[in-house]
Length: 152
Image 1: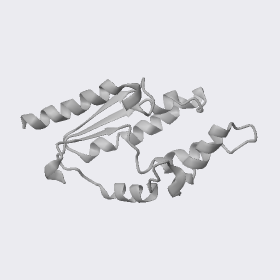
Image 2: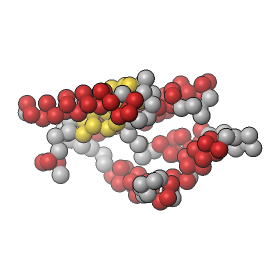
Image 3: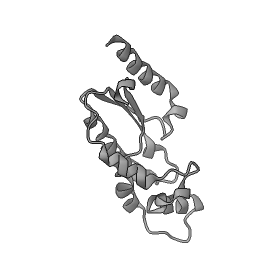
């Protein structure tokens, strides 16, 4: 629907390689793992493939397959907002947060390569839910894309 789309804003977006990158970073389980960590490990190391892995019943395997088909957006204005997702995860030991954040930002850096008209901004003070933690950054980015579309 390119004729109907003025631009695209990705807000700390899922990347199709994220499970391959982050699944292996989990240490082996130990009996003292908190239930939240055990659940997170189970999801990231393969549980994401099940339809019931999300409340929305998103078929993540199919979503990833379709995402890999997108190799270019041409000159579609693309704005990528990247959060400090791993810097703020309470289950991640502080000593590992910077390394994991670096991996996340490496994946996020691939998105701007999809368009010749792209920018990336970082909201490292926000966790993954930027729309909740720093809504103004999302609003400003959408307004910017909209204004640019009106002026062309």
